[in-house]
Amino acid sequence: MAALTFNEARAAVLEKVRAGRVLPSSEEVALADAAGRVLAETIAADRDSPALSRSVRDGYAVRAIDLPGRLEIVGEVRAGERFHGEVGPRQAVEIMTGAPVPAGADAVVMIEHTRREGTVVIIDDAAEPGLAINPRGSEAAAGEAILHPGKRLDYADVAMLAAFGRERVKVYLRPVVAILATGDEIVAVGETPEEFQIRNSNAHSLAAQVTRAGGTPRILAVARDTVEHTREMIGRGLEADLLLLSGGVSAGKYDVVEEVLAEFGAEFYFDRVRIQPGQPAVFGRVGGKEGGRFFFGLPGNPASTMVTFEIFARAALQLLAGEEECALHMPWARLTERMQHRIGLTRFLPARLSAEGGEVTPVHWHGSGDVPALTRANAYLVTDPERAEYERGDWIRVLTK
Image (cartoon, rainbow, N blue to C red; front, side, top):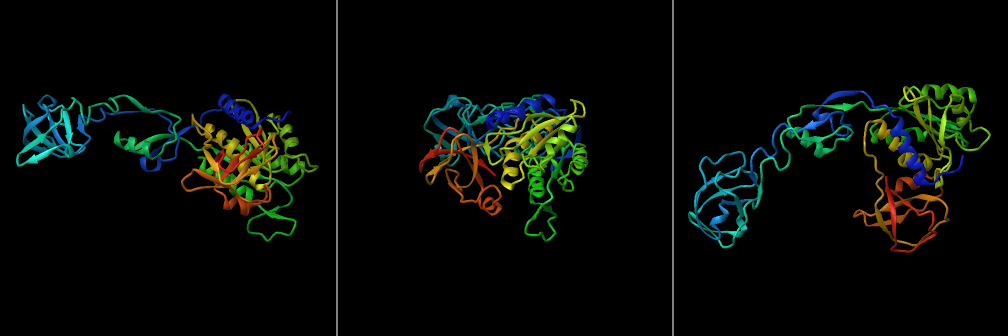
């Protein structure tokens, strides 16, 4: 298959998963457990918001027609109270932020713009009706749909649910993601490896990424470099909602993953992407729409595995979880030093993004197996495949970790 560009490969993931996904079942959870889950129902306002017109400033509720002028202070109203009278001609009521606007008043003048003399307030400037007032229903009308299915709930959404009196909410079930590392060189984390062996770090980094993206990781036993054992383990992995394989997708003699997937009748959408790290990334599907399973073959070097999950597999997982939006956040930052790279590939290089987010510094590393360098990084530089040189102070895209 022809190698795709980064943009082409990501577009293929979004297109194929959107077209072929089956939305997960749903469950009800308590409000305290809703943050981070994907909404599976429409949430409408149970009443006007605000339920009555309220002040957005500390000051005086007045009739705009009476200004400028000297007004008699006839009372006070705080948030959580009502003023039971009415503001008449050349009268004012002292009002606090969030308090209901008294009947008869149509403006609130900030306390900083007034002078008080006993029971009189002096206001030297005119005011327009509606000044510093949040009208009833201006935020949401009763019955208006505010939150929609496919939204991953954040803290603001939780606040909205609480404001609408929702103690429980319907959310989609988290997709189960099978994680299958491959290779005879891999041993368990608790083992002492020989010099030619490595511990299974990829499975655990992927599990952390899956959890952060809203899935439930299921780490399988390592698939050994035989067709028979790889076939057995891939079969188990295809029982999950999404299968992530790490390693075994290059062109080596013992890289058998694609061969085995083909035995399962897999349709491959791409098997190489013009990126670094992660060129031999694989994406495809086994089975039809009902019961079919998407899979990713992620290259085995740690940086390749981490990067290809973030830029490709994460989007697939979010869509399978019921999300409607899965944008890749890549802000711009200024380079703190000169940088060169070969054109032709979009590179994701470890870097340190400043605390303010405005500057980024490349992290020295020794290739995609250098996990210590990745721990020193909090972002990746994203190079333009058509641009070979960047000067200090140039803008460059950044993928945050």
